[in-house]
Length: 138
Image (cartoon, rainbow, N blue to C red):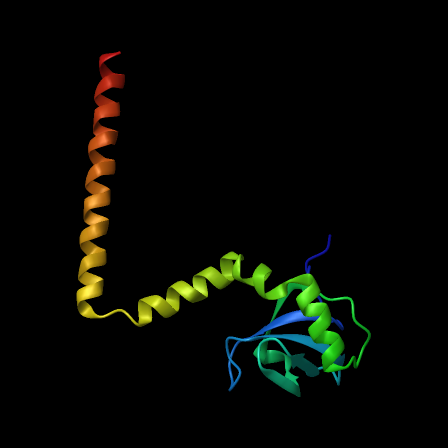
């Protein structure tokens, strides 16, 4: 039984969780030691640097590149695989985007959201009660 699906390997796309490049994607270019890897993110403005593995969250995406590939090669492969587009379609990226939007909401925006949820729930509740009533009569 395999517990892990995503391994630290050359070509693995990773999400940087914290630090100055937080929230950006990068590609693992080489493994430095057990706690650090060399990463490069030519399409996400992450310069080539050694990063601690504790900062990285591995994604399901992997590029077919040789270790210590040039930035030009990584960029070409990144664009060929459309990693940015695939990333934006994942639930993970959508949740991050939602968090950012909610953090930027004003009090009035939160109030409008609350009222919209109340209206939606009212519609759902009335339809559910109608369905229950019909089921009871049948």
